[in-house]
Image 1 (cartoon, helix red, strand yellow):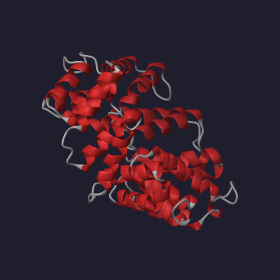
Image 2 (tube, one colour; image 1 turned 60 degrees about the vertical axis):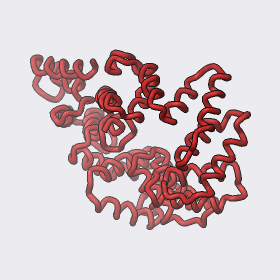
Image 3 (cartoon, helix red, strand yellow; image 1 turned 135 degrees about the vertical axis):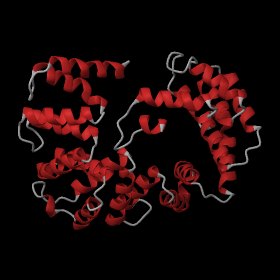
Image 4 (cartoon, helix red, strand yellow; image 1 turned 180 degrees about the vertical axis):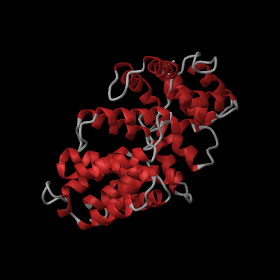
Length: 351
């Protein structure tokens, strides 16, 4: 849950404060992953349940967990101590492919451990691999270090994509688009990029936008592009879920920046996402009504109505904006008492 509140997600409103609290709760119950996330966030003691990030790193290291040792090496500024930690990690019995890759990636840029880095990946490749994350890292290794083995790398990348690794989905989609390592296949390119974008991958979304615009023979007529694009988007739209509506809203808003022909679709899907409860989409609709842009007519009343819906749905990003609208009577009857209540809620969230 903590990761969902802090990692990029196409439908969930970010809430770093809630995420931190959940990480602290999980770390207090012994989760090494949560402890290390608090280290990455560089939490102060006030937010870290009485322990700052250095204390959490010490607690994680006390468990003997390999990830904690590598994190300690990552933040260590003394080169000799860092090298000693890497030697300790290399001296451990690394049974799992994930562990070997963790160590390999940690030592990758340290010249004295260059051969160890290569050896660890060779060991991983000599064993059966079923984990999509491991398959993805091996594919990246081969592409970066052994370009002559590109065909093998692509097989691992495809396996990782089929296993659900969104970064691998994006890479496979791009390969099908460019013909670099795979035959050009627009249908498969769009399919993999859409899958990756639906999982929140911004790189895949941008590639998808580029792909669709490149297929347009006339930027004032979106129907004149590749029919496969139209079919895939129609199939996606038919799923009628909040996640898909949010994705299509983001997609068409990006497309409309390159061609006004996509403005109506952007308006339709942004309204759809807002109606299905996406808070960020509600705020976009409010802003668009207020400015009279993106195909929305100018309407202060409708702008504030959407602010109200977002605020009452619990979307924290709307609290202060709704308070200001109530304070000045923007699109609604002025109500200073209600404005103060929402402003207080906004302040409580900020604190």
